[in-house]
Image 1 (cartoon, rainbow, N blue to C red):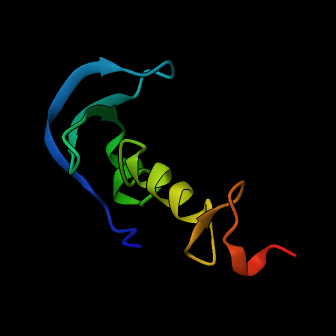
Image 2: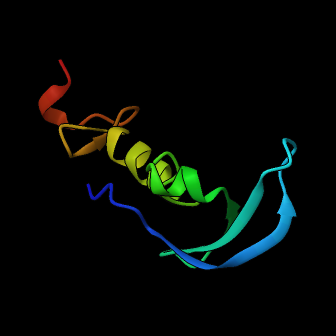
Length: 78
């Protein structure tokens, strides 16, 4: 699973977060637009819009790479 940064900076925004820090506009490789602090992106604390976490969850949801946990394959039923 590729965990590299999926964000491309579009521009600096005039929007500020609740702490008064300037947010930048980013486009994720999946096409989503998000606002994030540049320091979070540079330090790899923010890698994507959330699509990376969803993909990692999907991979973990499979047992032995074959079946969804509720529907085990015949090899694992006793």
